[in-house]
Image (tube, rainbow, N blue to C red; front, side, top):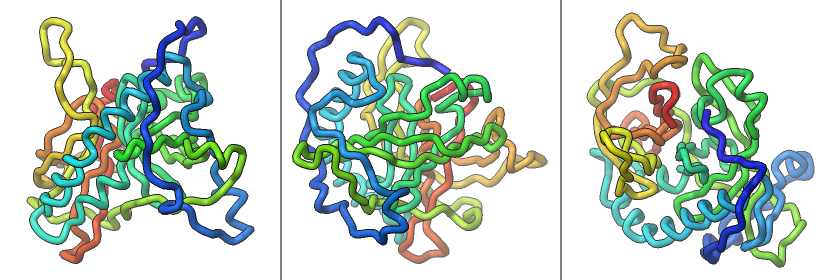
Length: 285
């Protein structure tokens, strides 16, 4: 796993943080018993974000600016892609997060109180790498809203990691305040879709062109929507073993950086979006 953190970070000039979703749209009351676990720490907008070097924070700000610029076109594209029926693509877009790190990586919110799924290898390919890496990462919703999530459970065989959002960048007037949010989310699919069912993949392709014979950069958006169909499972494989490559087959376009991206499909023909996690070969992000 690549690690961006450096003990000798150079000073950089940061871009201005973009204005994002009003917290009034996310905040919700919660019983006292739930508040201790679900309450989020507020980091004032524009301040130094914990766990990031100056160069990492500069990259996060650049991604926020790009997401803000792309939001209108992403909204329009998501609303136009019905996935062959009642699939709510826009809800899936709202629930998708991208890692702020250079290596890219994608995740999806699966509960309104901030539980998030991604691939285990986004935190480390081995138990040793996991233990020596930072278990807290900054991610961005497509609106540019920055949240910090902590890896709670890590499963190398299934290549799954369960994260919990623990902090959010918000208005400075809330500095130090703890509150509970209701995040956009999609439900996990209770079963596989029928073969040839339409799907949508939403993910963050990496910036480096790994198919070029010379160093080159891609011109992709930070968040890409691609359509395809579910093509079944690998014959004779262990469907619980994603340690080398995923067992699910589909033909929606993906790239390095799509690891952890949601694959969205209808739930039995009703207008409810369900998801699976996209698996790419180990070593890709």
